[in-house]
Image (cartoon, rainbow, N blue to C red):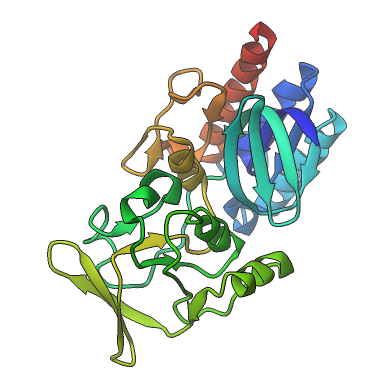
Length: 292
């Protein structure tokens, strides 16, 4: 499945961007599940002239995007890789190829409920295997997560180390049959006990479970819940500061053919802002592809 533009995220930024790419005859697919906006009971500060629920707004946006020719699939993106032709986007069900992408999933609201995670960031705790996995060649490494996103990150350790533990922190695995088979084939150790904290000196040394037991390890990669635009950006080498994707006025990142819009770029977290950034990203990614 090949596209001109792959938009990651089905919120107001992604839907808005698609209106400009599709009207510019760019083959466009939007990949993502419902955004946080769908949970909003009522929205009063967007210029519709009347109150509207978040779900109604998303539904209207989806209908409009489809009417202009956008393809929309409700799948969870678990990884994005770059190749010579563009990008390969992997979901929990399919793989899509595109010449350019727009990151528009917003920010993950899931807080890792473990003491000292923040303390050891960069000191044994990491969020990107592609970026930092090579530091742990032959070492004991953990992946913290319970979805297909976690399994995707675990696979990135292939060839780096075989001493890998999957920590679910009390969560039951929510993964595909393919992921289950991978864990079985690789004999990956899975520990489902709830975690209390991570401990060490200057660097991470061990995990302490709530039952008082512990497990020593040298590195821990966090892939908790669903991946966000920030996670994808880090994996692609895009500049991220203070948990925001850095973009210019055209919504371009510092990596060619990668644009970003909405809450993931920081700024005023409002529907109007997301729609505006999405429009800017859609228009400029269209112009970028025409020049190419």
